[in-house]
Length: 292
Image (cartoon, helix red, strand yellow):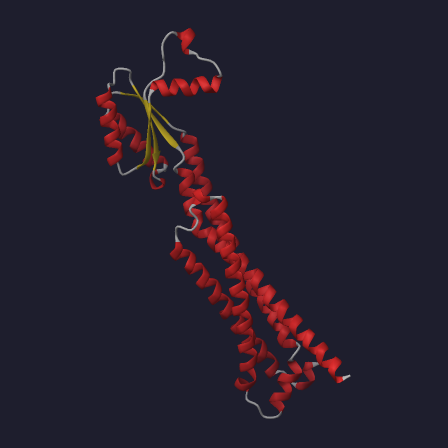
């Protein structure tokens, strides 16, 4: 009979530990995922900004020397991330592929112009900065026929990035608060099941720190285990994203990724230590009658 009861107690204890570790793991994994998203959000936003191209068209009178000189000038420009020269012959071929027929046969000549597609660095993709770049190019190069880019898209991208950043901050604060509550509740329930043991130890003369220490150490170990599992899951998530979306370069900032892992581990240890400390303190301060 005693053996059956001991097995029941052991299963109950393992079940309690499992639920605590699982709750810590899920919460820390969610927070870690959010942290990884935050450190990569600027990279994602910059990558999107740099896909916006400014196309510079040249007059037909512009010869190869002028075009090459302009290309050399762009390579030295601090705002240029990437430049692509598109001759009017290449542009005609692209248009032919798009419309499905050779428009040069009935026009008799190529009406398109030589051009450069300029992908501007993300820091310069602002309304005023792009307008300044446009004015500078027009002033320094009289052979430029026209400069075209999506002005509305530039404004829309910047406005939306600011809104998304604000919501990310709000969601981060909310999830952190929920994480603290969930982990704290799981640990409080675990301590609650041992409230009679705590009070018995106190009644036989054990000090509060002596009683509290094993519970705190156990919870910290569970927190470390949950954090370690969360970090392993985050590594798996990073590997999956890197394998399937290599262009994102999600593993480029290894220092920041390591910082997120350290923060996840530290948060797991800190919250379990604090929650267990205050939970045991609460039952230590209760009268015996209040335990029921």
